[in-house]
Every structure is written in C-alpha cells, then in structure tokens.
Length: 225
Image (cartoon, rainbow, N blue to C red):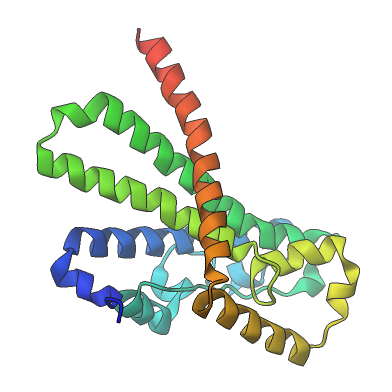
C-alpha cells in the first residue's frame, strides 16, 4: 500500500511543507484570476461576495485545506453568474484564466529554478541548496499538474467550458448527465491506468514551462557578461 501524503510530515517534511505551500498559493491565484476575469467580463458576483481574495480560508475552505494537509489534494471555487457576462465567449475566457494562471506560475517557478541554480545555488550551503531546488521544482510540477488537470474536458473542470465554446453540443447535457459523466471520468482518471494520461500531460506542460525559462536565463547571462 502506498504511503499516505501526511506521512511525509515526519519522513520528508521539506517535501510536505513545500507541496502544501505551493498548492495553496497556486490554487488561490487560480481562483483569484477566475474572479478578476469574471468581473472584467461583467460579473461582479465574486468581488461583491468577498471571493476576489488570496485568502485560502475564503477561496478553498476548511474541507479543502484539511484534504490538502492529509492527502495532498485540494480545490477552490469562486461564485460566478454567467447571466452577467457580456459576450458569448466570456464563460470560456473566465474558465481559461485559471489554468493559464497556473501555467504562468509554472514558468515563473521554472525561471527562478534556473536562475537560482545557475547563479546563486553554488553560493548556498548544501542543505539550503537542496531545499530551494526542491521547492522550486515542486512549484513547476504542481502548477503544471493544476493546469493540465483543470483543462481536461470534464464537467466541473475549467476545460469543459473552454471546449464547449467550440463544441456546442456539450452545452446540451443536463446537470444530471454532467454529474454522472464527471464522476465516471474522475474515477477513471485517478484510479485506473488512465492516470498515466494526466502524468504525461503534466510532463509536457512542465517541459513547455521550462522552455521560456531557459530563454530568460540565456538573456540574463548575455546581459551579465
């Protein structure tokens, strides 16, 4: 039987706290971007109800925070009222903003990873070097995972609204049909060999996050030379 996530608290505390901090921050940024873009597109619901916030207690909630501490998984949500949207594609844009924010965070963590490791890492003590490397690598991987997972065309995930913009029949499913499809899809994704699909997608997102980071590092080296 695999190790429970919380066991890392005493077997690998560096990994445990790095994962919890990165995922909490990344989900809060993800949800904040949903709220901000929704207001930009005409829906002030999240802003008016106090959900345009980076406070994890607000946008994630107690249950999600407990799940993160125990199992390493978490979620967030902000209220959105599509009736206020100005354009046909507003819902898709709001949904896309969350995964896009995670990809930008993955790029930023990757930039820090390469810059720190190339220009600062050698000046750090071995323990600090390894701890910083772990934290930044988790920053890339966690945000790549959040971006890849949320862009899957599954109801309740952001990818559903984005794909539905280009595949109108997806909008004809009833709430009950969406719920059934979502449950089956998530169970298959997490508890069967299909989980490899998510791992592969995460690898590709992480790879693409490192590419612009390498360009930034090259520019830093050119400017510094």
